[in-house]
Image (cartoon, rainbow, N blue to C red; front, side, top):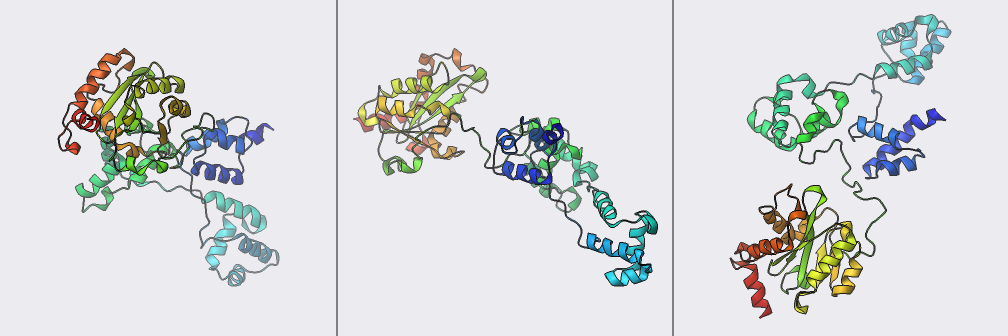
Length: 382
């Protein structure tokens, strides 16, 4: 029983990697494979850096099992090596080497010889970084400078246009980082990657489990056209700005005028966030309460309560699509001038947030033809 919980058959491994490519979590894969804990799946995925190993295939020129059985029958019948080779359409030297490396004429067995051939063929070829110390040093140097693998690969092409030995793809760099069995680049260098990721994740990787997902979401694709073209005021974009020690503030940007409001949050749970936003939005005139666009963060799980309290419909962006809240993303970038990463936002008062929002709202914006958000909004309300 213990062995069945540790070892995976080739079919189970194939299913494991197929589910991993689909973006399923380690826990989901373990349950699907009937594993009591996820350590076995985690070990396999981590060992390969999250990159599914290529399926092994025999060389087309290698002897097949049927040919080895023909060799075995030929020797049992007392045929000469040349006669066996003619039957197979192979060189006599090929048949001679096959017999010699598998115990000679007296001990040769087709199945055992085929198994040993498969095991001997497992000779992994060294990657380019392992063979080229100068290239390896350059790549490690640039990774330590926080260059991305794609930047490194592009720079090498420009820096060494006439030296093909100093070329490498960004995918090969990632593989050398994630697959530590290659023993080429130190694992510590992954800390210099932008994401600091330790392994390859599928593009469709699930960022949430089935628990706690937002119910009854209304897609951004159903948002009114007047919100899309920014012609009518009252359509807002929102998000959380994160600080140190899991502290947050809510940011709201009006799409027509780029007018900004900042909301202090005591906690990130949905009840707290929704109540704080509802209180802030409730202060606005009815003409400025039309819609709110948010990402799929679970802090808006109680969006229906927010809509009941404010009569403002919430629309949710597609997963991993921050450009669908472009104004809000841009504003969050501007706010980092006042709240750098690592700032403990619990120490910031609502009065301080209001002061920062006022500065942004009184700053001329190129997208508004250098009119300020405050003036644009005042003009609309007037």
